[in-house]
View: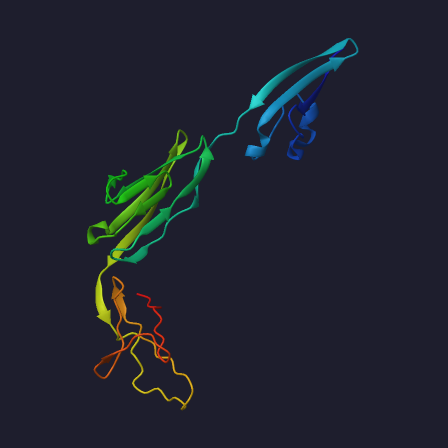
Length: 209
């Protein structure tokens, strides 16, 4: 007699999206995902017996970004850490480009797959950067600009208050927060006296560039 057909997934549950095609000559898997990978078996059977055949599905995908860097303004002499993470199958390789030239690990630059580290930033590190993820199914790019800042101390954005009322026997806090890059060294004085930490004065460094 004409055999009937039956499909099953040998190494897991049959995806529910296949619907009634489990009894048809053609198994259809719409919107393929990595969960659909595995070994599938087609069984033909009638009153005289049965026979089976196995086939494996391996799902590949072109790269897509999971994490990318963004435009950054960083003070000179500091450290930059950027990450680019891409998904895909086969696993994509990630490379880095600065102003059109591929970066390699040397001197202050460390390239480790999707991680880029530049220590002791200099003005010449400024520019356009790209991370490139690629496998045999495609190539994708992500771009960002790095601006290395150099600025002499400037109090215009955060001026020190000229008059601070205080109660006798109380406590007063005076903030000194100039904008500068690299981070400046701060000194406090009262008249001609250079102030240091003691029982009455407490100097805390909380400067932000």
